[in-house]
Length: 138
Image (cartoon, rainbow, N blue to C red; front, side):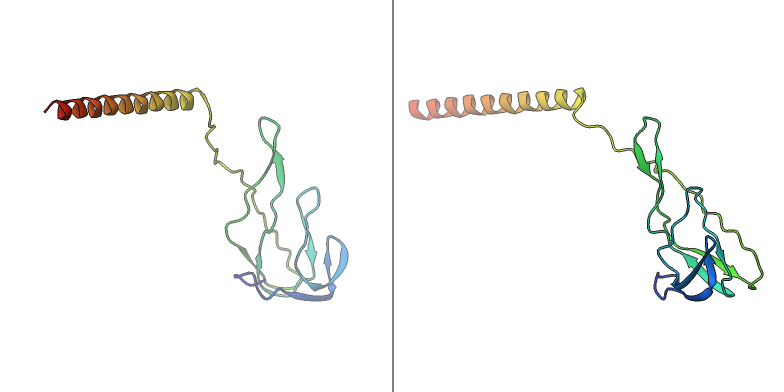
C-alpha cells in the first residue's frame, strides 16, 4: 500500500507468504502465533505496512486487552530481490487507565451537594415568607 493506505500492491505467483504461493493484492495478511510473517520474492521498491488489527495480551489482572494499533504506517524499502529485510514492529500496551467512578468520594460529594441545595431552598423560602409578611404588615 502507499502511505495513505491506497493502491495495494498486486503480486504475481512468484511471491510466497509464510511459505505458500500467493498472488493478487498484498493485503489482509495475518501473522502466525509467533507474531511473524515471511514474504518472499517481493519486487524492489518502497512499501508501507498498515496495521488493521492489533494482537491481544492478558493484563496484570488477567483481562484480555488489545495492544495499541500503529499510529502511522511503517515504511520499508526492498533494494534487490535477493535482499533479506527484517522489519520489527514493537507492540505497545495502552497506558491509559479510565478512572473508576461511583466510589465513596462520589457518594460523599453528591450527599454534600444535595444538602447544600436543600439548605439554600430552605433559606430562600424563609426569606421570601418573611418578606411577604413584612409587606402584609406595611
